[in-house]
Length: 460
Ligand code: PMP
Picture 1 (spheres, rainbow, N blue to C red):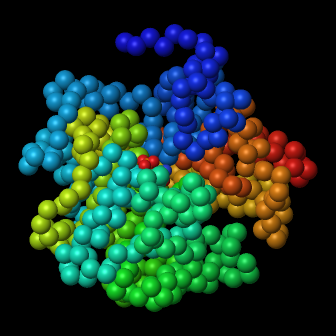
Picture 2 (picture 1 turned 90 degrees about the horizontal axis):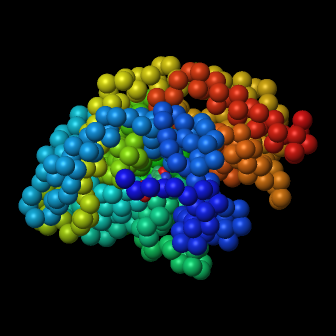
Picture 3 (picture 1 turned 90 degrees about the vertical axis):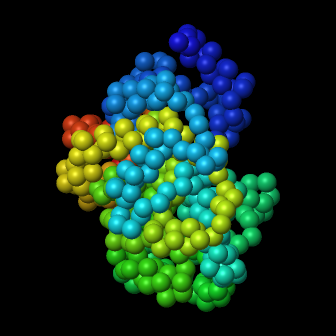
């Protein structure tokens, strides 16, 4: 066993000296020092100072079965002993990869029977771009190259995934649009609370969906390959589209022969109370991106799933010149299999849908009704957003140096609760194994932090 016997200050110093963090200002973190997480069990993590922290984010939306599950650990150990690595390039396969493909066909919606493996959500979305362009090429519609997604969407951090995403600050890293490839277009997001003005949610949902039609007509349907979106936007702020949105998007994709890709990286594997967010939102996609909850983050693995119709085309199209050394890694596949069995065996999807999800949302609704800082709460299953506002009646958010999200996030940190701030929303996405009493703790601590934030901002 590697011995990690240093104290917190030493770890912070070494981290500052040698480790570059994702999505972080190194100089700012260097001044503060990182929090060092040492262990996890169930819904909790511990830091190097011995603090027990309730993980309201399941890591990064991924530890669906909670920490420390023996079934997943044993699966990794056994597979490591048997076959720690082999590839699937040389007309070879291994049992965990094949069994995982079979299991995925079982848990994904009807018609999804074919899976291409990757190591992360970003790689899987790059795979989407490459496979979908190949698909249209094989069909002889070689101009269908452009992808449409939404502003404020997150689809990953590789170049293609950054381009699929709609985060301006990511596109502009390295200079204006330096990280935005040609062939990627973005339309408005269906975020009624902040962008719906005086429209009803239903009117606004239709309007935002019709931006897709306008964009397709502007570009020419014969140039548009696919539209990609999360069923419920996660990192954008847990944005649930109005009911009118998805049926209209589906109609438009069908009418103009544009493939629909559901990015299920967050929504998949039970998070929204169904196996996939597409089921919760009533969507029938052609392809799905999966990662995170597929292995509960115990090991990195991801996949692109596709319908029989899409696969039939690729099946007649010759070589697929795409793949990763770790596509369907045997140990990660074995862990993903154990993870899916764990979700099934503990009825986690049903539990989220019928018990813990409604319980969490009832508690959050109480905040929306009674807390001066909370404009609305939203989400499905164990995926929720709390919108912080300056004025509930007019849906006005804070501006300038009143950074409500960061203030609240800092109070959460102090109170040993992980809630993430996305702009002026607080985000909750705990392990799917969270109990009702742990949800009570989450809500109590959350309210404490909202109260403190409201006092700082003069609302209480
Ligand atoms: N798609 C979505 C919807 C995501 O939330 C994420 C990660 N947060 C990704 C893709 C990228 O996944 P990864 O970080 O594993 O590359």
